[in-house]
Length: 274
Image (cartoon, rainbow, N blue to C red):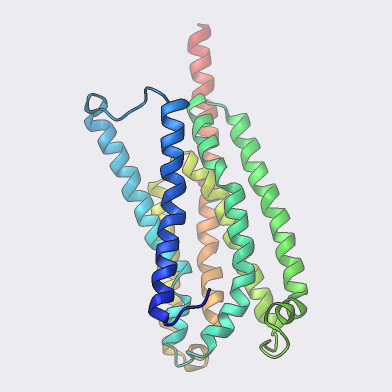
């Protein structure tokens, strides 16, 4: 498409975004509810204070997590642009976009596990929860290897992508720092999918706040040290460091929750048998 101005292009992109996000949902709603979910409709008689409290609690928890994620993952370009190296935002994008595609694909693959684990939690089926966790980690390993292949072949890849004239001089140290970053990001996504299904909300919020605090602390340190302030790679290193307690904490919480569900299911079975 060709546009006469940036405003016209922006308007087109905004319209396309609104339509592609909402029209499929609208069509799906009009098809699914009158057929597969016939008879299901909102009603005030199903409203309870406890349900309202539970939904609000969960919604606010996820909102807080999303804010912390934005602070962790979506502020790098803004920070780089304000570090007197605005021209390096383009360089950062060249390094980040190919790896971000891998993360996005992995996130799509692991998205259904949230709902499956939530169902299995209600059933007390820890075997299937463990199976789904192993599946998420298996996909993580596959996509991590894919990321490694991309890292090794990054120079020819970016030349093919951008062309010889626009290609940058690749620093493989930076490439492998990005690889570490996205590997941590995907490992976090694996445990987050399971944790969400197990309704581990409040501990997640605390862990994400800690990770965001580490990111803020790292940025403040960069501002205090000129040699770090002029090198945006330290931002990625800060993100990678911030992810460590988050991943370790979530892994522990998920494993503990699975054990708790197993013990509860065993107690319930004993009571039924007696």
